[in-house]
Length: 610
Image (cartoon, rainbow, N blue to C red; front, side, top):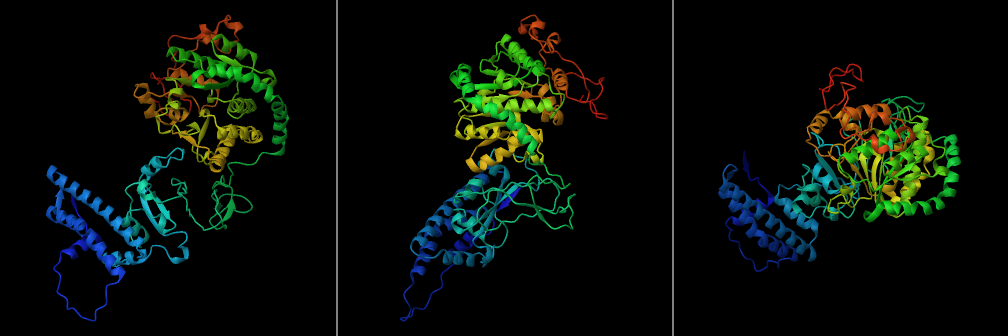
């Protein structure tokens, strides 16, 4: 591997300086040099030494072999000299500008020495919008400007970010990069996202799909500023799938190529139904908060943090498994506050030492039975219970972690969110990545079964707004769609800083890992990962959640306690916890800690995990 120093304008300038000067005839009538000529002389003379140094080193080094230490050192010296020259050029350039020499004249001087390329990259008709452009590394840009969204892995042909500059004052400080960005030719690549944006006072970022093979155009129009993307598609006016012969028409952001709309407004019946239950809740809320605050304060303790869960008796087996699995690892659960929606769940939780809040007036109408499947009527009602309990907590002066009961802890996740040295500590709210990056969850794909909230005005108003969106939950049968729609608006309008704990990271795995990342699950069984939690999401029923937990060795509840009230298990739920997990095979095509090759597949035709 060999590197040869390329010919640059600076090198050509220095070469000219080193050439013998021809004698000139002196005329008595010659005019005095202009200010511009003098300043140009200062420019050339001031940096001649530095430029000559580069030429001298590069000439002596010739072609540098990176295989030898001495040559590598020479290359490092060349790089250091180049950096010093760039700094001096910037200083002299600025001095010339300060003395009234126009940037255009200096630009003409330099470009005349670099091949005469003076043609601007963009025409004058869009000069107020575009002056230059650069490229930069996509990973570096995403890390430098963390917008909280789950960042897709960088792949071939999606490796860089295109930056557009609207005026010369926004161009990078590096004059070489600034000139190359605004002149017609190859698009220059910035060394880093910071160097590319060091003169940007504003930075607007557009995230757009790159995976779907669609004929997509992106238009940027100078206009009264907007913070939503206007989406047009070739969808027939009378409905139907995308038709390339149809004219482009304005559509909602959830419009799909098959003609479906991901999200529709709730119907009046949903709004009236929700108002009927919301009105008494709002009347009772001041008294509820007065009674809830001392309970929450005791649970929060010195960390000022409450772990919030909500459960009915139909899901109590999952609740008890969470408690039993945490005890098997000696994890403290004193910060957990359970919002029980029935007396049976209240009794079970108190028996195993979990703090409980139960208010019959608020939760009396909630179903006691488990939902049979995702989005059925019982599931939807329990979604409303999740809305109520987090809105109550957001009104109180505590941080809180909300989580569903279909989780196990391997480490206390609060230690992650309380780590003040972590680069993500400044965010307002954190969500586990759902893993489903469908259009209706864009751009966050937030999982509403595990999220951490820092108490402030932004998060409090967010959950108050969520409370008023209950009709959308009823209409879509999804807590998630309504919440993500609000996240988009509150991030834009109020600066709510949201961070998604990406599905491609290892600390907070869930259903996406279980169903889609089999290599990761094999590594997990070998203890090559040390996650905080495992969330059995992406699973349609309690029955399968329990079976999947049993297969991966995370079920710690004795069968004798399944679906039982406290009275029917003898008055002490602590006896339900197993010292070791109950491991059972159910489906050969799903991850399992032991071989389950003899079991039937849950999905017909799928191969064995082992």
